[in-house]
Amino acid sequence: MSKKYLQQYLVNNWDHIQLSQDWQIYSDSDDPEAGVEFSTGVGRPDILLTHKTDSRVCVVELKKSNSSDRAVGQLLRYVGWVRDHLDDLDVSEDADVEGRLIVSGPTEKLEYALSAVQNFTLHQYNINVELRTSGSPVDK
Image 1 (cartoon, rainbow, N blue to C red):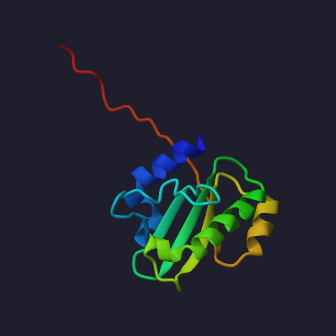
Image 2 (image 1 turned 45 degrees about the vertical axis):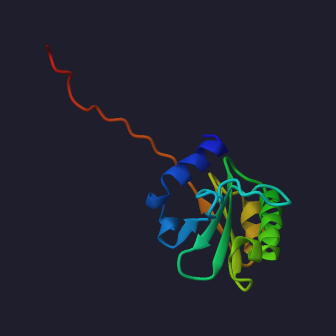
């Protein structure tokens, strides 16, 4: 599965994703999906989230395969930029900024790198497709 497809799947099915209970995809008055491929001066995080009740922002980076610990540096860069630009996002300047890395399979190096960073969470995704026979065709 490509990273772009994973991103589209998460965005299109956001209401069915566990994270949607507390988080929403960042939007502004001009663009309801402004948080998808959010433009920063240091790159484009895959998804930017705002907490529904708390003053919190979350940067989500998706990796399609076993990801190296370099992904942590990338996520740190995005979190740092967001932290410095909270006022541009119409979020409290005191908001907590966290990062989430979503991968298909974490490596040991990645897990160690993430364990050294506060407010970072690692998620692993699994894709399951099930085909069922819907019945026999009707004879005419």
